[in-house]
Length: 627
Image (tube, rainbow, N blue to C red; front, side, top):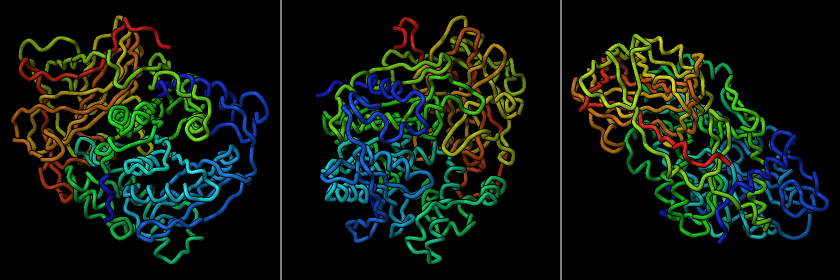
């Protein structure tokens, strides 16, 4: 396996966002077309107007990597004399995806050389793909782009999810000609993405690798690089098999559908490393934050499962990047979105509407970002605080100087009950009072043959769906506060501490934070999971002693929400979230090799010396109104 090598402007964002949003009112999805407002005054990007160029496309331009492997890119460039800055996009999903050419042509018409490359072993590029091993190829490609005769030596990168990985891993090696990046929906530690709280991201992990294997199969069957120049993935029938059969397969490590063992061996490499070790260090971007020399625009959504990684990349680079320019050049935008890139129409998720201002014209924001960093545009785009958050509940945007908010107060909401919170919805209570005397514990039985279903989700996304129907299950425990007398803002990282005991040597616990309206409608805000053997950290697992009480700290990620007067805070606790995460078989056997499933009797304690509580970052009401 190839491994990556070891590797004085005021920080502002408001003007950039407001100008981008205001200027693009009514623009078609994906941003205004090239050539609009191209004469006189100031254009839609807020920069001095530039000419709109005719665009030349060169297909499958070869670039030789340091080991001799040829990667191919499509190059969209202005049809004009002279040199221009470049934008690089490296993707495993095909550089020729449907509808993308128009977008790339539009960027090139604005005076950028747009280079879109298939990553190693994907589509038109040669070699064998090693998922997420993109650092050296990224470095080499940046320097190759900078050397092209029509490029002026200034290169930026952009893209989300895996395309964020290709940026961040390359930037960790500090290519000399990489000026700035724009990673959205990124991870910091790949281990934390794959094994969240030690639980395996089954649906996304298996589905992604099966989809990638389709291109490898086509390559194996003899298709030329020209014939491979277009997206391919699972068929509708295969996706149905994934949902109905393959996700239920046990043992996990024995699955071999669609030749996945041969065509996507990286799936099994993950299964072979359930604890954090040297394998995962290779892909740990956080370990290399101090080597970054590039400003970065980080964008994510509160319902993106890569929310935590994006927040931590902003936070780490803001504090530890190698240069003052890079540290001061970090920007963060978080809206009420899923894993997909936001547009002005991104104002709702399923049946939850976040108001008309919830969307973002990301395309125009990106153009403003690179107008500044690559094209010497108006420095005013860097004015304003570096963080912009959408506060749900009141559905307002707000600018902040830091993440997390310094003024947020960690506040404990203790779990109480008379022992019937798993069967009586009104028995479980949340309040600020620590248990003063022994309270009856809550008990339920977790059966991995009948796991709590994940519900609505769509590829690396959670959902603000109403979980109330699931709370009728006997393996779901609910704790709810009294109706609030006044608004309560929760913005920041959310945690759950549970004192538990289990009849099993290993098991899972999940937590879900919910906003309940006066009419009973509920909206999920954030959630998390912990595999009990990893309660002391991801490096050294330790099994439970059945029946012995232990303390668990469950990461519920982050949110920003105002619980309005009359609303209630609700916590849901269970032991499964399937198929988003694999089922814990409760046997304590090594991960991935167990096909037996056992029942686990779970106990949640409420006592002065074993107090379970929800930890919320409460923003005091005395703070100034939102900007």
